[in-house]
Each structure stands twice: as C-alpha cells, then as structure tokens.
Amino acid sequence: MNLERLPLPFLVSRTGYANPRVRRLVGWTGYWAHTLRLTLPNIRKWMKTRGELFPAVLQVQTINRCNAACDFCPYPYTVHLQEKRIMDDALYSKIVDECAAEPGLHDFVPMSKNEPLLDVKMEERVAEFKRKAQPHQLVELVTNGSPLTPVRVKRLMDAGVDLITVSLNAANEETYNRVMVGLSWRQVTDNLDALSKMDLSNVNIYLRFVREQKNREDLRVFRERWGDFNLFFFDVNNRSGTVRNYPSKIMDYDRWLSHLKRISASHVYPACPYVFSLMHILENGDVPMCANDWANREVLGNLREQSIREIYNSPRMNQLRELMAQGRFEDIEACRDCSFYHEWMKPVWKGGEA
Image 1 (cartoon, helix red, strand yellow):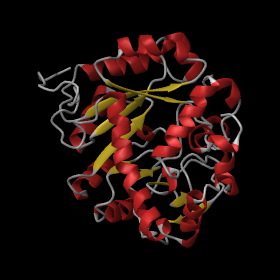
Image 2 (cartoon, rainbow, N blue to C red):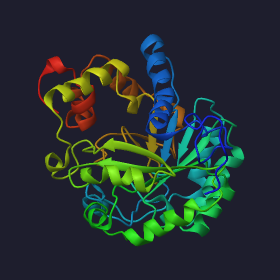
Image 3 (tube, rainbow, N blue to C red):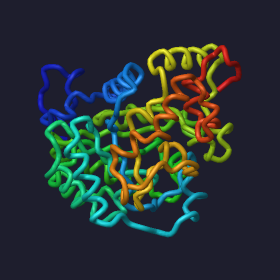
Image 4 (cartoon, rainbow, N blue to C red):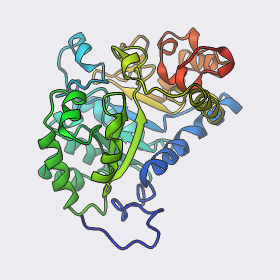
C-alpha cells in the first residue's frame, strides 16, 4: 500500500488521504461521525420547520441480483420475487441529473439489495455521476469483494469512486463459508491483498464486519489481519423482520447494555434517520419507504413519473415522519418488527427487550 507519512495519523485516513471528501473517514469512529454529520441535520430541520427535505444519502439499485447467499441477508429467499433486471440508462441519468443539482445530497451509493459489481456498466455509471456531481458529493461502492479484481479496482478509481466498502465479516475461511455462503474466501482475500499493494491515495477503503453469533469470535483476528484498511463494525439487522432465524444470530448483550443502547441512541436520534436523510431506489424506479424493508411493504412512488424531491416530500412520507416524531413506530407496518427500532430507538419505558 502506498502510504504517506501522515502528521496526524488518527485524523487522516491511511487510504484516500489525498481525497478531501473521504480523508477524514478514519476507522469505526470516523465512519459513524460521517453518518451523524449526514443524517442529523435533516432530522433537526424537519422537527423544527416541517420543511422540505432532500436525501443526504441516496442508494441506487442498478441491478437486482447478488452472487452470494449471506447468512444474515434476506436475499436468498426474496430473489424469486422478481425477474432479473438492470436499470436502464435513461432512468439512471435522470436520477444523477437531479442529484447533481441538489447541494443537500452528499453520498451517492450505487448499491441496494444487490452486489453492484455484477452490473458490468458500474464504472460508466460512477463516471457519469462524478462528471456531473458537485465537488462535495462522493460516490461510495459497497461490495462483497468477490468481483473486486485489480482490473476493476483500477477502472473504478479511474471513474472517480471515492469510497469502497467491502463486506468481509470473517477472519478465517471456516467462518467465512458459514456466513458468506456461495463466495470464495481465497478469491476475496486475494483481491484484498492485491488491493493493499495499489496506490490508494485517492480512494478510501473500508472493510465491514457485521457481527452475529457465527462470527463474533473472529473480531480480534479480523482487526489484526486487516489493520492496513479502515475497519467498521456493526451488529446484524433483521431487515424489518425479513431475516430468518434472527434470534439465533443476534448478539447477546446484558440487559443493562441493551437499555444503554436504546437510551443513548434515542437521545442522539429523535427519530429514525432512514426516512429523514436516506432514500433508496430500485432498478425499476420504485422508491420503498425504507432500505431495511426487503419486503417493500410500502412503495412511495416511482422515479419514472416523479422526481426524488417530489417523492421525498410527499404527503405520505411526511405522515410517516410525523408518526415517528410522535414515537408511534409501531403504527408503521415496516417499523413494527424492525430490529433498528427495537434495539436502538424504542424507549426503555415501553418495555420489552431487544
């Protein structure tokens, strides 16, 4: 890895250090700080003024397929719900054009419920956004790493990608085969080893670890093995009740720690950030209420007939925000079974354990 000697090693990333959009994303704390900076302003603005919003983070599904069947993901038993489709160029360009005209958009993420690099046009899509984007707007690609060959990394960097997050979730082949079903440990780690030898001064690299019961013992070794990259950890999510056998996967926290999580999170976030600061768009232009709801129980509009701003400020979207502001999450079908609500947002005084 081509590393500069940095004067402030804890404040400037060892990857992407020449890129002003991502150079301050350092480790777990940097990732969460970035998330808070993006999501809190919209929540506070709406709570104060009930004014119009534009998503700070936009996820776009350009292809509705993945090459894995991960243990913590609903994809293996939801893929049959739709035929394989790829977003057409005209729709993608319409989305990009609107985003490029909106200063409130900060992170453009061409990934949602899929493996984005299965889209053979991904490099072209990244390049189109970067060509039109405002200087502060960044592109983040989230991948399982299997298609992330040195050739594709080079093409993505040439296209202007700012941040690549690889969902690895294990520190050895045995655990990897249990968690990341259908992928090759050797292929992915070979890709990462090759990546570590490249000039990464303009692209920040994160390795992601989704903690669950099957991989929790790997965390220490994971930190040691991949310390040259930025690392980010978070607990498994039940994707609005669609992840099967979720109770067997959830991290087993003490009661007091579960309460502390809910108290601290509900203090930081007066409402769920997903409908105040994020939006995700499916390949056919549909906009579901929330990226966590893999069942797509509520679709708020379609980008073929409407704009992002129009859908994001629709009467129904604002009604959902009002319900959340009142703490009435359980009146919303997609929120009722959501682990993010029960484990982070639900007031302790309402009872029930995460």
